[in-house]
Structures are given as C-alpha cells and as structure tokens.
Image (cartoon, rainbow, N blue to C red; front, side, top):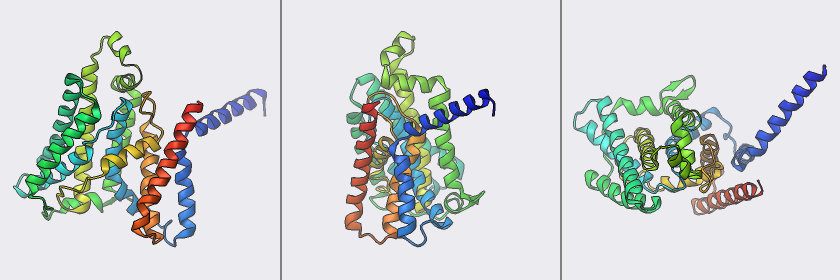
Length: 324
C-alpha cells in the first residue's frame, strides 16, 4: 500500500468515525431494541413483523417529517393530530358523496394544506407563538372533524385501502413507499434548496433572512404550507390503514411526532437537525411499541416504559449536544 493510499484510508476512517459520533442516540437505541426483542420474542425478526411495523409507522413518519420543519424554526405544531383527524373524515366523506378517487384525495390534502396556511398566516402576521396558534387551530380542526362525522367513524368500502396499505411493490407495501418518498422529498428540500436554507435560518438566525432581502413572514408561511401538504398525505395513509374516516384517529400524533423529532437529534433552539434523524426517532417509538406488545407486556406498563426510554434518549441527546 502506497503512502497516498494509506492517507486516503485514514481520512475515510476519520470521516466514518465523525459521522458515527454525530449520529443521534436514537440510532444506537434502535439497534439495541432490535437485538433485545429478537431474543425476547419469537417472531420479532420475521419479515411479516417488519412489514407490519413499517405500515404502522408510516403515518407517524410523514407527520414527523412535518413536525421536523416546525421544530427547525423553533416551534411545535400542536395541530397536526387534529389536522390528521380532519383529513381522514374529509376524504371519506368526499368518497361517500360520489367524488372520484383522485379529486377526493386532493380535497383531503387541500384541506390540511389550507389549515397549514392559516397557521402560517397567524404566526407570521399576528406574531403569536407557534404553540398557541396551533393549539387554537387544533381545537377548530377537531370540532370540524367531530361535527362532520357526527362524532363517529365513517365507513365506506373502496379498493384503494387495500392497494395503499397491503399491495406490495418490491416487497414493501405502497404505503411504505409513499412514506419513503415523503422523507426523501423533505430531506431534499432541507438540504438542496433555497427554501431549506431559509428554514434553517428561521431557526438559527432569522436576522440573516432580512439582511438577504427575503421576507421572514413569507418563509414562515411556506413552512406551514409544507407541513399541511405532508399532513394531508399522512391522513390519506392513516384512513387507508384503518379503512375509515375517524375523528379521533390522529389524537396523540402531534406529541409522538415531537418525541420522534427530538429523539432524532433535531434542536428546538438552533435550527439544527435532519429528517434522517427523525426517521430513527420514529423507528425507536414504533419498534418499542411493537416489541412490548409481542413480549406480552401489559398495556398498563407500556406507556410508562415508552415514556422512560423516550425521555432517557432525549436527555442523552441534549447532554451530547451541550458537550459539542
């Protein structure tokens, strides 16, 4: 081996070590959970179980991509679960009313996008804190979902449910591929576009946007419109999985998504983080839920165990970031 080859190899090894150090704790905890549950339960490593995990986590994964955008601008969107509820109801009602499949899907996504736009306008123009504005919007959207559905699930038979949640392509359900595309699209926006740079600037240095001649208000509205589009897609996925429009199906998704984003290493103060880290945060939450069920852990203790693991991971991540 020549001196140049040895130097090149050392540089590559150093780069790999640096990347490993930068990985959020969620990555290592996911690996530990997989190893632990593979010994603890009989069928945890089966392909059917992993397919089940993938389908179950897809709506949360897409919602968490949306939440990542908001956390990067130093906020927390508390309306995501309510918007998810509304989309499932609006879409199924549209199908029930005889509206063709594609227009009905677009109506559901448009409803969530408009809600996101309103959030953005309220935050940008009225200067309300994000959590207050989105909390108020959550109450409005939940009321819409409950009123439109009369407080009950709406069932409407359609082949699209099976196609999205069960039809496989290259070994993975269509729903999972849609989730992967949402992750890739969000990642590209954040890392390869001017909008991504503006989003990070909003969280880390909003004054830089003003100096660059770009409107902070406009960038804020764009962030919430993007979250609305993602929530709309997630709502279609969730409705397909449960085969109904459910006015409470998305309850809790907003908090789980915040946990997933923080577990993935995204900072609420610096505009630092990535959607790839969020993926591991979502995997941690869902694998832990699945493993506890397969290990026959009582539901009484499941929430406590998940809370302890999530809190521990977030504390470790915060400690590592403080040292950096």
